[in-house]
Length: 117
Image (cartoon, rainbow, N blue to C red; front, side, top):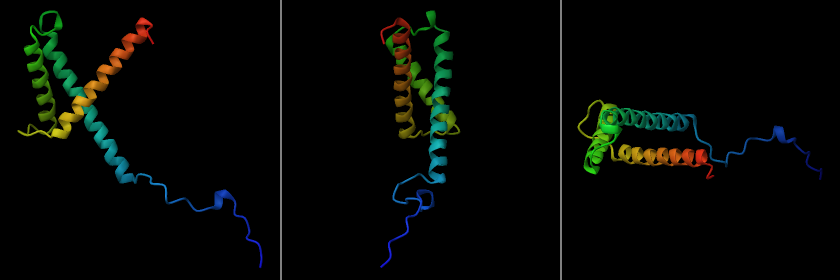
C-alpha cells in the first residue's frame, strides 16, 4: 500500500459546508439597506422641515410633537410606496429601529464631545 500524496492547501476544493450568501441574497440585502436609508432620510427631511418653522424649532406641546412625528413617518413611507394608502408594518418597525440607532449615535457623539467616553 502506498502513502497518500499530500495536496497543497491552495489546491484543495473550497469548503461548501460554510454558508455564504449567494449574489442574489447579497443584492437583496443591499436593496433592503438602501430602502431603509432612503426612508430614514425622507423622514428626517420631512421632520426637520416641519419643526424648523416652529417657535425655537420645537413643537409647542408633546401632542404637537407626536402628531408631527406620525405625519412625517406616514409621509415618508407613503411617498416611498407611490402614495399607497397602506404601508408595510415591517417598514414602520424598520424606521423605528433606525430612529433609535440615529438617536444613540447622536447621544454617543455628544458624550464624546463632553469627554464622558
